[in-house]
Amino acid sequence: RQLHRWNQLLAEARNAGVAAEGLDGAGVRYANRVALSTTPNEFLALATVLSQQSTILDGRMAAFRIARAQADGAAQTARTLLASAAQYPQLNLAEFRDQIATATAKVPAVHSADAFAPIVGQLQQTAVGIQGLLNARSGAYNQLADTRSTLASAQSIGALIGNVPSKIN
Image (cartoon, rainbow, N blue to C red; front, side, top):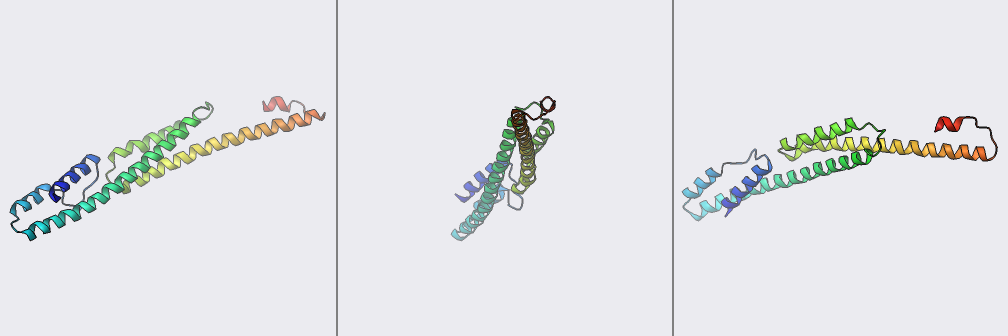
């Protein structure tokens, strides 16, 4: 049973692109050991080794899945912010779009959980940049509204404001 579980886990890891470095990835070696085992103790020893190897690989796969989910989540956040910013044609978003594309293009080549960290960092930094741009735009429009309100108040009390409203517009 342990050999069957190990082979399935190893195949799943290979399909997911998870590195099996440091583990005995040759299922043939274990299959040969099963064929050569003749005593219950030999079978028990082999089952113990396979169980230990499976536990290590299970841990790597879980960490890989979590890291991949974090990268996917960071990419989705950046894309959502980019879509929100895209509604304002005056914003130049080409660099942000390129940064997201560059980061997400690296994902298929990743084979360990640790290798996702720089990608997640790049995507998060891009999202912060986009959010900063959106915040700056919002702040500028708020200041513009405040300025218009102040000018309207000044005009209503008869202050001479000249052509300031047309300059602001």
